Image 1 (cartoon, helix red, strand yellow):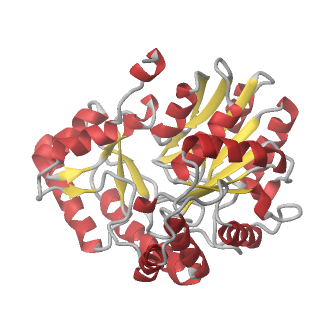
Image 2 (tube, helix red, strand yellow):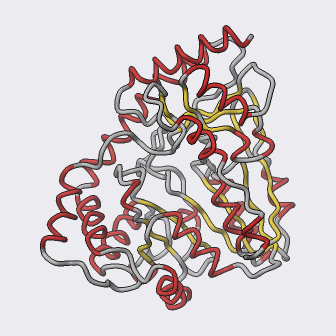
Image 3 (tube, rainbow, N blue to C red):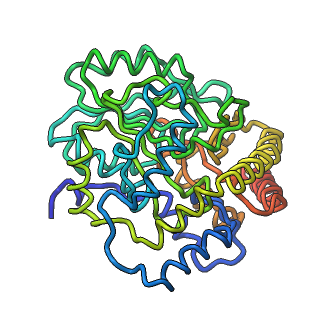
Length: 390
Protein backbone atom coordinates (compact mmCIF):
# COMPACT_ATOMS: atom_id res chain seq x y z
CA UNK A 1 0.00 0.00 0.00
CA UNK A 2 1.17 3.56 -0.71
CA UNK A 3 2.92 5.25 2.19
CA UNK A 4 0.76 8.32 1.60
CA UNK A 5 -2.35 6.30 2.42
CA UNK A 6 -0.75 4.53 5.37
CA UNK A 7 0.26 7.89 6.81
CA UNK A 8 -3.14 9.57 6.45
CA UNK A 9 -4.42 10.71 9.81
CA UNK A 10 -7.64 9.06 10.93
CA UNK A 11 -10.65 11.25 11.62
CA UNK A 12 -10.45 12.70 15.12
CA UNK A 13 -14.16 13.43 14.92
CA UNK A 14 -14.82 9.75 14.37
CA UNK A 15 -12.42 8.90 17.19
CA UNK A 16 -14.51 10.94 19.62
CA UNK A 17 -17.74 9.46 18.27
CA UNK A 18 -16.37 5.94 18.70
CA UNK A 19 -15.74 6.74 22.37
CA UNK A 20 -19.47 7.32 22.80
CA UNK A 21 -20.86 4.45 20.74
CA UNK A 22 -23.46 2.38 22.56
CA UNK A 23 -24.19 5.08 25.12
CA UNK A 24 -27.80 6.22 24.87
CA UNK A 25 -27.18 8.94 27.46
CA UNK A 26 -24.76 10.89 25.24
CA UNK A 27 -26.04 14.04 23.55
CA UNK A 28 -24.24 13.82 20.20
CA UNK A 29 -23.44 17.02 18.34
CA UNK A 30 -20.20 15.80 16.75
CA UNK A 31 -21.26 15.07 13.17
CA UNK A 32 -22.26 17.73 10.63
CA UNK A 33 -25.83 16.75 9.98
CA UNK A 34 -29.32 17.47 11.18
CA UNK A 35 -31.17 14.90 13.28
CA UNK A 36 -34.30 15.61 11.21
CA UNK A 37 -35.27 12.96 8.65
CA UNK A 38 -35.45 13.77 4.93
CA UNK A 39 -38.90 15.17 3.98
CA UNK A 40 -41.43 12.53 3.00
CA UNK A 41 -42.01 13.75 -0.56
CA UNK A 42 -38.28 13.44 -1.31
CA UNK A 43 -38.21 9.91 0.09
CA UNK A 44 -41.33 9.05 -1.89
CA UNK A 45 -39.73 10.19 -5.15
CA UNK A 46 -36.94 7.66 -4.62
CA UNK A 47 -39.42 4.92 -3.71
CA UNK A 48 -41.47 5.64 -6.83
CA UNK A 49 -38.33 5.50 -8.96
CA UNK A 50 -37.39 2.09 -7.57
CA UNK A 51 -40.94 0.82 -8.01
CA UNK A 52 -40.81 1.97 -11.64
CA UNK A 53 -37.72 -0.16 -12.16
CA UNK A 54 -35.16 2.64 -12.43
CA UNK A 55 -32.34 0.46 -11.17
CA UNK A 56 -29.95 0.76 -14.10
CA UNK A 57 -26.94 2.91 -14.98
CA UNK A 58 -27.46 6.56 -15.79
CA UNK A 59 -25.38 9.08 -17.75
CA UNK A 60 -21.99 9.69 -16.13
CA UNK A 61 -22.77 13.39 -15.69
CA UNK A 62 -26.25 12.89 -14.27
CA UNK A 63 -29.85 12.91 -15.49
CA UNK A 64 -30.34 15.74 -18.01
CA UNK A 65 -33.41 17.06 -16.22
CA UNK A 66 -31.53 17.29 -12.92
CA UNK A 67 -28.55 19.01 -14.52
CA UNK A 68 -30.86 21.51 -16.21
CA UNK A 69 -32.68 22.15 -12.94
CA UNK A 70 -29.41 22.72 -11.10
CA UNK A 71 -28.16 25.05 -13.83
CA UNK A 72 -31.37 27.07 -13.64
CA UNK A 73 -31.21 27.28 -9.85
CA UNK A 74 -27.56 28.34 -9.88
CA UNK A 75 -28.23 30.99 -12.52
CA UNK A 76 -31.07 32.44 -10.46
CA UNK A 77 -28.96 32.59 -7.31
CA UNK A 78 -25.96 34.08 -9.09
CA UNK A 79 -27.28 36.43 -11.79
CA UNK A 80 -23.96 38.30 -11.85
CA UNK A 81 -22.20 35.25 -13.27
CA UNK A 82 -21.57 36.21 -16.88
CA UNK A 83 -23.80 34.28 -19.28
CA UNK A 84 -25.39 32.25 -16.50
CA UNK A 85 -24.67 28.66 -15.52
CA UNK A 86 -25.50 26.13 -18.25
CA UNK A 87 -26.23 22.44 -17.84
CA UNK A 88 -23.14 21.44 -19.80
CA UNK A 89 -21.05 22.80 -16.92
CA UNK A 90 -22.84 20.71 -14.27
CA UNK A 91 -21.76 17.25 -13.13
CA UNK A 92 -23.95 15.31 -10.70
CA UNK A 93 -21.90 13.29 -8.24
CA UNK A 94 -22.33 10.69 -5.51
CA UNK A 95 -22.10 13.25 -2.73
CA UNK A 96 -20.34 16.56 -2.27
CA UNK A 97 -17.21 14.82 -1.01
CA UNK A 98 -17.05 12.86 -4.27
CA UNK A 99 -17.34 16.12 -6.21
CA UNK A 100 -14.42 17.55 -4.24
CA UNK A 101 -12.30 14.46 -4.80
CA UNK A 102 -13.09 14.42 -8.51
CA UNK A 103 -12.01 18.04 -8.80
CA UNK A 104 -8.73 17.33 -7.02
CA UNK A 105 -8.12 14.27 -9.21
CA UNK A 106 -8.74 16.39 -12.29
CA UNK A 107 -6.41 19.22 -11.29
CA UNK A 108 -3.58 17.96 -9.08
CA UNK A 109 -0.48 15.98 -10.05
CA UNK A 110 1.98 14.51 -7.54
CA UNK A 111 4.29 17.22 -6.27
CA UNK A 112 1.97 20.11 -7.17
CA UNK A 113 1.80 23.05 -4.80
CA UNK A 114 -1.63 23.31 -3.16
CA UNK A 115 -2.77 25.97 -0.68
CA UNK A 116 -5.75 25.48 1.63
CA UNK A 117 -7.47 27.90 3.99
CA UNK A 118 -7.86 26.35 7.44
CA UNK A 119 -9.42 25.42 9.86
CA UNK A 120 -11.39 23.24 7.50
CA UNK A 121 -13.13 19.88 7.30
CA UNK A 122 -10.18 17.45 7.22
CA UNK A 123 -11.32 15.64 4.07
CA UNK A 124 -10.49 18.73 2.02
CA UNK A 125 -6.82 18.73 2.94
CA UNK A 126 -6.57 14.92 2.93
CA UNK A 127 -7.72 14.76 -0.70
CA UNK A 128 -4.79 16.88 -1.86
CA UNK A 129 -2.40 14.70 0.14
CA UNK A 130 -3.88 11.54 -1.37
CA UNK A 131 -2.98 12.92 -4.80
CA UNK A 132 0.60 13.49 -3.66
CA UNK A 133 0.40 17.28 -3.50
CA UNK A 134 2.67 19.49 -1.45
CA UNK A 135 0.10 21.04 0.84
CA UNK A 136 0.53 24.42 2.50
CA UNK A 137 -2.06 26.06 4.73
CA UNK A 138 -3.04 29.61 5.55
CA UNK A 139 -4.91 29.70 8.84
CA UNK A 140 -7.75 32.05 9.69
CA UNK A 141 -7.03 34.12 12.79
CA UNK A 142 -9.35 34.16 15.83
CA UNK A 143 -10.25 37.53 17.34
CA UNK A 144 -12.85 37.68 20.10
CA UNK A 145 -14.10 34.29 18.97
CA UNK A 146 -14.49 35.27 15.30
CA UNK A 147 -12.17 33.73 12.73
CA UNK A 148 -11.00 36.16 10.08
CA UNK A 149 -8.85 35.98 6.96
CA UNK A 150 -5.53 37.76 6.56
CA UNK A 151 -6.08 38.40 2.87
CA UNK A 152 -2.55 39.68 2.28
CA UNK A 153 -1.09 36.53 3.81
CA UNK A 154 -3.25 34.33 1.61
CA UNK A 155 -2.37 36.21 -1.59
CA UNK A 156 1.32 36.08 -0.68
CA UNK A 157 1.07 32.30 -0.30
CA UNK A 158 -0.39 31.88 -3.80
CA UNK A 159 2.40 32.08 -6.39
CA UNK A 160 2.69 31.09 -10.06
CA UNK A 161 3.86 27.70 -8.73
CA UNK A 162 0.56 27.16 -6.90
CA UNK A 163 -1.66 24.78 -8.85
CA UNK A 164 -4.74 24.89 -6.65
CA UNK A 165 -6.31 26.97 -3.90
CA UNK A 166 -8.87 25.19 -1.71
CA UNK A 167 -11.32 27.39 0.17
CA UNK A 168 -14.51 26.51 2.05
CA UNK A 169 -16.93 29.36 2.80
CA UNK A 170 -19.26 29.44 4.64
CA UNK A 171 -16.71 27.51 6.60
CA UNK A 172 -16.86 24.26 8.48
CA UNK A 173 -16.10 24.56 11.39
CA UNK A 174 -15.81 28.31 12.05
CA UNK A 175 -18.81 29.80 10.22
CA UNK A 176 -16.41 32.29 8.57
CA UNK A 177 -17.72 33.64 5.27
CA UNK A 178 -15.86 35.41 2.48
CA UNK A 179 -16.92 38.92 1.55
CA UNK A 180 -17.46 39.72 -2.15
CA UNK A 181 -14.45 42.04 -2.27
CA UNK A 182 -12.26 39.30 -0.81
CA UNK A 183 -13.52 36.82 -3.41
CA UNK A 184 -12.84 39.36 -6.14
CA UNK A 185 -9.29 39.96 -4.92
CA UNK A 186 -8.58 36.23 -4.65
CA UNK A 187 -9.99 35.51 -8.10
CA UNK A 188 -8.04 38.33 -9.75
CA UNK A 189 -4.82 37.21 -8.05
CA UNK A 190 -5.35 33.59 -9.12
CA UNK A 191 -5.95 34.74 -12.69
CA UNK A 192 -2.52 36.37 -12.61
CA UNK A 193 -0.79 33.32 -11.12
CA UNK A 194 -2.70 30.76 -13.22
CA UNK A 195 -3.97 29.07 -10.06
CA UNK A 196 -7.16 27.03 -9.98
CA UNK A 197 -9.71 27.68 -7.24
CA UNK A 198 -11.69 24.83 -5.69
CA UNK A 199 -14.55 26.50 -3.82
CA UNK A 200 -16.46 24.28 -1.40
CA UNK A 201 -19.76 26.17 -1.10
CA UNK A 202 -21.97 23.40 0.24
CA UNK A 203 -23.16 25.69 3.07
CA UNK A 204 -24.12 28.47 0.67
CA UNK A 205 -27.82 28.33 1.57
CA UNK A 206 -27.18 28.14 5.32
CA UNK A 207 -26.51 31.84 5.60
CA UNK A 208 -28.08 34.09 8.20
CA UNK A 209 -27.33 37.57 6.87
CA UNK A 210 -29.92 39.35 4.73
CA UNK A 211 -29.12 39.13 1.01
CA UNK A 212 -31.13 39.60 -2.17
CA UNK A 213 -30.65 35.96 -3.17
CA UNK A 214 -30.80 34.52 0.38
CA UNK A 215 -27.43 32.81 0.06
CA UNK A 216 -23.83 33.49 0.96
CA UNK A 217 -21.50 35.32 -1.43
CA UNK A 218 -20.12 32.95 -4.06
CA UNK A 219 -17.10 32.95 -6.33
CA UNK A 220 -19.64 32.52 -9.12
CA UNK A 221 -20.79 36.09 -8.45
CA UNK A 222 -17.34 37.37 -9.44
CA UNK A 223 -16.35 34.95 -12.20
CA UNK A 224 -16.80 34.10 -15.86
CA UNK A 225 -17.39 30.59 -17.28
CA UNK A 226 -13.81 30.25 -18.54
CA UNK A 227 -12.20 31.06 -15.19
CA UNK A 228 -10.14 28.36 -13.51
CA UNK A 229 -12.84 27.82 -10.92
CA UNK A 230 -14.64 24.70 -9.72
CA UNK A 231 -17.54 25.20 -7.30
CA UNK A 232 -18.87 22.25 -5.31
CA UNK A 233 -22.36 21.84 -3.83
CA UNK A 234 -24.37 19.16 -2.08
CA UNK A 235 -27.97 18.26 -1.35
CA UNK A 236 -26.95 17.09 2.12
CA UNK A 237 -27.34 20.20 4.27
CA UNK A 238 -29.97 22.35 2.56
CA UNK A 239 -32.38 19.48 1.86
CA UNK A 240 -31.76 17.21 4.90
CA UNK A 241 -30.26 14.55 2.60
CA UNK A 242 -26.88 13.68 4.17
CA UNK A 243 -27.27 9.92 3.81
CA UNK A 244 -28.37 10.08 0.17
CA UNK A 245 -24.90 11.03 -1.10
CA UNK A 246 -25.85 13.44 -3.86
CA UNK A 247 -23.84 16.49 -4.92
CA UNK A 248 -22.79 18.45 -7.97
CA UNK A 249 -20.03 20.65 -9.26
CA UNK A 250 -19.90 23.64 -11.58
CA UNK A 251 -16.83 23.75 -13.83
CA UNK A 252 -15.47 25.52 -16.92
CA UNK A 253 -16.87 24.09 -20.19
CA UNK A 254 -13.44 22.74 -21.18
CA UNK A 255 -13.48 20.36 -18.18
CA UNK A 256 -16.77 18.65 -18.97
CA UNK A 257 -15.55 15.78 -21.17
CA UNK A 258 -12.71 14.88 -18.83
CA UNK A 259 -14.98 15.03 -15.79
CA UNK A 260 -17.30 12.50 -17.40
CA UNK A 261 -14.36 10.12 -17.77
CA UNK A 262 -13.33 10.61 -14.16
CA UNK A 263 -16.83 9.91 -12.89
CA UNK A 264 -16.89 6.73 -15.01
CA UNK A 265 -13.68 5.51 -13.39
CA UNK A 266 -14.82 6.42 -9.86
CA UNK A 267 -18.53 5.67 -9.46
CA UNK A 268 -19.88 5.42 -13.05
CA UNK A 269 -22.88 7.54 -12.05
CA UNK A 270 -25.08 8.58 -9.19
CA UNK A 271 -28.01 6.13 -8.66
CA UNK A 272 -31.09 7.10 -10.65
CA UNK A 273 -33.48 6.82 -7.71
CA UNK A 274 -31.25 9.13 -5.66
CA UNK A 275 -31.24 11.62 -8.52
CA UNK A 276 -35.04 11.42 -8.66
CA UNK A 277 -35.06 12.36 -4.98
CA UNK A 278 -32.78 15.27 -5.84
CA UNK A 279 -35.14 16.43 -8.58
CA UNK A 280 -38.03 16.40 -6.10
CA UNK A 281 -35.96 18.37 -3.60
CA UNK A 282 -34.99 20.93 -6.23
CA UNK A 283 -38.54 21.35 -7.52
CA UNK A 284 -39.77 22.03 -3.99
CA UNK A 285 -36.72 23.90 -2.74
CA UNK A 286 -38.93 26.85 -1.79
CA UNK A 287 -40.74 24.55 0.66
CA UNK A 288 -37.69 22.87 2.20
CA UNK A 289 -34.65 25.12 2.30
CA UNK A 290 -36.19 28.30 3.75
CA UNK A 291 -37.72 26.23 6.55
CA UNK A 292 -34.39 24.52 7.21
CA UNK A 293 -32.54 27.84 7.30
CA UNK A 294 -35.15 29.48 9.54
CA UNK A 295 -34.93 26.60 12.00
CA UNK A 296 -31.13 26.52 11.95
CA UNK A 297 -31.04 30.25 12.64
CA UNK A 298 -33.33 29.68 15.62
CA UNK A 299 -30.99 26.93 16.80
CA UNK A 300 -27.98 29.21 16.41
CA UNK A 301 -29.72 32.05 18.22
CA UNK A 302 -30.61 29.73 21.10
CA UNK A 303 -27.23 28.03 21.46
CA UNK A 304 -24.75 30.86 20.91
CA UNK A 305 -25.96 33.23 23.68
CA UNK A 306 -26.24 30.31 26.09
CA UNK A 307 -22.65 29.33 25.41
CA UNK A 308 -21.44 32.94 25.51
CA UNK A 309 -22.92 33.22 29.02
CA UNK A 310 -20.50 30.58 30.32
CA UNK A 311 -17.54 32.27 32.06
CA UNK A 312 -14.36 32.43 30.02
CA UNK A 313 -15.78 30.79 26.89
CA UNK A 314 -14.67 32.39 23.60
CA UNK A 315 -17.26 32.36 20.80
CA UNK A 316 -18.62 34.61 18.07
CA UNK A 317 -21.96 34.00 16.37
CA UNK A 318 -21.38 32.38 12.96
CA UNK A 319 -22.76 34.10 9.86
CA UNK A 320 -23.21 30.81 8.03
CA UNK A 321 -23.03 27.04 8.35
CA UNK A 322 -24.41 24.91 11.15
CA UNK A 323 -21.70 25.02 13.78
CA UNK A 324 -20.70 26.93 16.88
CA UNK A 325 -16.91 26.91 17.15
CA UNK A 326 -15.66 27.93 20.55
CA UNK A 327 -12.73 27.85 22.96
CA UNK A 328 -13.16 26.65 26.51
CA UNK A 329 -11.38 28.18 29.50
CA UNK A 330 -9.72 24.81 30.04
CA UNK A 331 -6.14 24.06 29.07
CA UNK A 332 -5.41 20.92 27.12
CA UNK A 333 -5.62 19.07 23.85
CA UNK A 334 -8.95 19.34 22.02
CA UNK A 335 -9.17 15.62 21.40
CA UNK A 336 -8.56 14.83 25.06
CA UNK A 337 -11.12 17.40 26.17
CA UNK A 338 -13.72 16.10 23.70
CA UNK A 339 -13.23 12.54 24.95
CA UNK A 340 -13.53 13.70 28.54
CA UNK A 341 -16.78 15.48 27.74
CA UNK A 342 -18.18 12.24 26.33
CA UNK A 343 -17.14 10.18 29.32
CA UNK A 344 -17.74 12.69 32.11
CA UNK A 345 -20.63 14.83 30.83
CA UNK A 346 -22.39 12.72 28.20
CA UNK A 347 -21.75 15.48 25.64
CA UNK A 348 -20.43 14.73 22.15
CA UNK A 349 -18.53 17.52 20.37
CA UNK A 350 -15.89 17.55 17.63
CA UNK A 351 -12.31 18.49 18.58
CA UNK A 352 -10.91 21.66 17.02
CA UNK A 353 -7.56 20.11 16.16
CA UNK A 354 -9.37 17.82 13.73
CA UNK A 355 -9.67 20.90 11.50
CA UNK A 356 -6.23 22.54 11.96
CA UNK A 357 -3.38 22.36 14.46
CA UNK A 358 -3.95 26.07 15.13
CA UNK A 359 -7.49 25.26 16.35
CA UNK A 360 -6.27 23.09 19.20
CA UNK A 361 -8.21 23.99 22.32
CA UNK A 362 -11.37 24.72 20.32
CA UNK A 363 -14.49 22.58 19.94
CA UNK A 364 -17.19 22.35 17.26
CA UNK A 365 -20.85 21.99 18.18
CA UNK A 366 -23.28 21.15 15.36
CA UNK A 367 -26.49 22.99 16.26
CA UNK A 368 -28.70 21.34 13.61
CA UNK A 369 -31.07 19.88 16.18
CA UNK A 370 -34.75 19.24 15.61
CA UNK A 371 -35.39 19.88 19.32
CA UNK A 372 -33.91 23.17 20.54
CA UNK A 373 -34.42 22.02 24.14
CA UNK A 374 -31.75 19.41 23.43
CA UNK A 375 -29.26 22.20 22.79
CA UNK A 376 -30.07 23.82 26.14
CA UNK A 377 -29.63 20.48 27.89
CA UNK A 378 -26.24 20.15 26.27
CA UNK A 379 -25.25 23.60 27.54
CA UNK A 380 -26.29 22.64 31.07
CA UNK A 381 -24.10 19.54 30.86
CA UNK A 382 -21.18 21.61 29.65
CA UNK A 383 -21.74 24.17 32.41
CA UNK A 384 -21.74 21.44 35.06
CA UNK A 385 -18.59 19.87 33.64
CA UNK A 386 -16.77 23.20 33.56
CA UNK A 387 -17.66 23.85 37.18
CA UNK A 388 -15.98 20.58 38.16
CA UNK A 389 -13.03 21.00 35.77
CA UNK A 390 -12.16 24.51 36.90
